Length: 313
Image: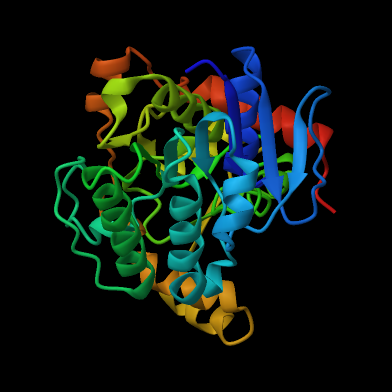
């Protein structure tokens, strides 16, 4: 396309990671959130907009080559607010000439009983957040099939990395490791569990926005090598120069926490991810686009460095 503008809805961890990947490629970037304010490098535009309003979306994506859907409501409000949010973005981008790249997680597959997670698995989510994700993914791909707009989807596992706050491997884990307190995982920490490095997620989304063969499909983004959660935490402790202390939070404690913390109550639905092997297969992406995930040691080192420079208050 003649215009190379890339518009990103959402200034959370994924939106920022996509922005960094696009800036590294020399692309002009516009980030969109409600306030029109965000901590970004010089030369990156931040615009105020209402993603629930198709007219606002349409105005903000005018002239864009690619739009990235990285926005989401509060975790406790997904069922009510997430589908209309994405539907408004789809409606606003449709007819603009831009392609839409959507960032997703893996909730729609549900419990795969420890089998490797590939893109061809059926959607069998039993919980409300998984069903919401399935509904949204199906609606997005149908918009592509019907010719409303070109769509590609990138899917990632639980993510960690710079600015990746609010995740299960975010501000509750790495500051504790740096303080010598060890790290807390969930469920059975001795099972293999794929974690996504947020920078890999951002780079993969940028790739999907560039390559026409990505359109009309969902892709699992490349990840660091899969290890057990225990090994993940122990390696982070080792790299931080701290004792390798590992603890686990199970369903019972989540239920107790859920009495006071809505986010903990919401996590109960996803407990199956930590009760069986949770291994993501990204072979399709790696073979098609030639991109590998960042080695785990390198990704953890960069993550720890970021938390050292940005103490969590």
